[in-house]
Length: 256
Length: 282
Image 1 (cartoon, rainbow over the protein chains, first blue to last red):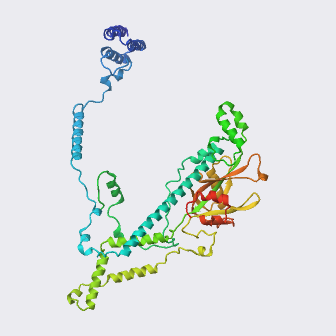
Image 2: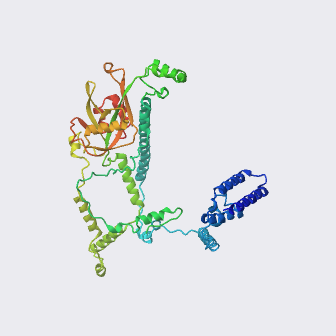
Image 3: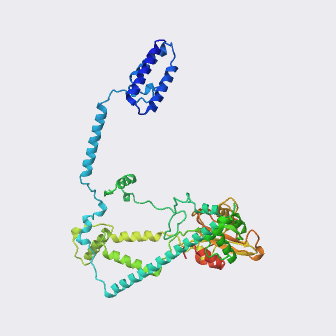
């Protein structure tokens, strides 16, 4: 009990002296705070208790000895936060970081080598005409067109170009009319009520995905059962394989 | 909720009297000065809001090719055949024809005959043709087309069909798109959905194409019907695609499903011009 105090006081004095010699005039703030905290800690220390006192004595000694020698300990009260108490068990200190670093370097080197090497192209089998189709016996006899036939074709192409132009113009007009009608409707709605307008221009989340069957040449026969198809036409590659192949950019792949 | 008038937005407002235009024009500039005085001084006409439904049955078959398209399709097919090589089936057929020819001329070899196929390419083609003839496709021109039954949904399978109903407006019976008056607390799209529900009694499933109206028809009531609150009505049209269901179960007799070309038989001219603006095909 009584022995604690002189040591603590001596420590405080030693601390104060050290503060003056180190800090000088710079940054008295934190040092003063720490001093106040240390003084508060001293007052809070129970006197004459054996069990707790011994632990506190050793911690007192640690902070008197290790004062500000390490930057991990920013608060005098945080005894447990000083370096020796905070580190993990140091069984594999030097070997592991170095080994991991070496492994990482090896991987990086391998990757660089692979990238530098010329990328092999996997040929797409569909783009290569099989030899049996290049046979000369397959070639159709080209009968030259008569003058009338070639004239008819040329005139038909011109007529077609004009037809498609008119069709395109008509489509564009229809679309413009559609958009203008909607714009006008929205403007008039805005004149009436701002909140209705805001509700109208809000995006409709339930609209997509929208699935709709397109038109066929003949209508569906109700209750018709289609005959079985030919299984050998199916591709040998599964869907997920095809997707995986096509996800990598810059490479050509074949579908077997 | 106070109605907000943005006078700058009105372009070609047929209803705006010159007096009102000057008032609004002046008011816009001096709005900040006059404040509430401007709001109360405006003699803005009030319009009833109506949500209408443009329910369309999409086509299930393709339209017939026009003569130009037919010609061009034939030409393209011709050119494609000319530029192609022989296929396996064609080569097989050509060799078999040669062999048949040789046998006719009696110049064939007895030994080569033993390895000949029993089924000729020609036989295969005949079998395929037979099978095709046996298949009966659905008719492109249905019975409803022949009878011109306009209440049927099976008519004109290559066009969009729209629903029209006959309703009493004011003191006359008119053909128009199904509509319902807007009530406070709902959006105009839900007004259109309500119109569909009251009309069909939940028999019809339709997919609405977005929250925004596709068109507008604005009209003023006859003098007799005008009140302080309403000078006329604004009908906002909403497009929807028919997914399933029909009006056969509903308790309604005076409805038709018509294509765009037949709308003129039913709708009034002004209404028709406005409706035609947001319809796509013929």
